[in-house]
Length: 252
Image 1 (tube, helix red, strand yellow):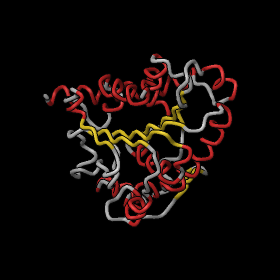
Image 2 (cartoon, helix red, strand yellow):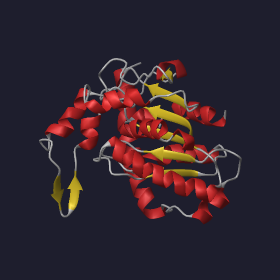
Image 3 (cartoon, rainbow, N blue to C red):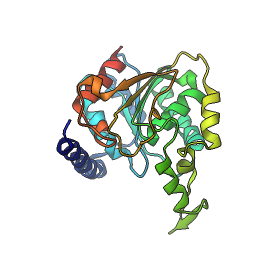
């Protein structure tokens, strides 16, 4: 794995991120019962995609496109407030899942989250396992990352507002190792039947703590074992080999 390839893939992901957001604004479809009912081409769980910190649902567009090309008829990218705490966000996601399951008449969904989104997906699957069949985490700081503390220190631990918009530090605090949230997360697990997968890259520049992504109750997958030896924290989301693996998981 060359450094040049890693840098190139990270830059390429950044460009896809930008254009994904632009395409989202122009052609994005809001959630509706009609769309969900018509798009269910095959009998698979609805798939809910969750973006990471300082991002929005536009970054999940390549994965949605891949899933749809593989016959997944119901794929929904959710926006959420990435400044809020994980537990609060999971409560919001749970409400959205109720709407989706009511519309599709399915019993469970599959959650796929990147970075903070993976942590949100994990908490949602632990707190509301009756609604989740599979939980797939991509580059997620399941045991925290010290880099998150910069997000907490940037606001000195206090929420603030700009033009009426509230900026919190809850998620940054939840991603900081040793904080009470991490202990609470460990205490939530039960043998609930949810299939969980944590996909990680050893070249993640944002999660520098060894084994932070790994969970004792999940299938832990190193991208190198998928033949993806040149991906980082950002490009793990759009790498074709990783996306192929996710498709395989969700088709099982």
